[in-house]
Length: 70
Image (cartoon, rainbow, N blue to C red):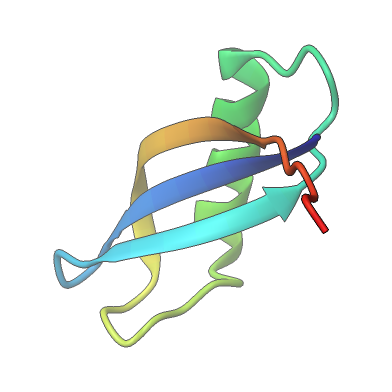
């Protein structure tokens, strides 16, 4: 089973920028996610065609379970 944390940010020109982190730590809290998202926004390290992220829109942990048949 694998897990991914997907952070979706609104950008300067009303776009959406998704940032995926593989295998996030267990027990991650909303406060921790918000603090790190703020750091990402302030750093201006991520830029898309719609500009830099300005606000965290959502954060989701996606769990994937793969069953190999052959």
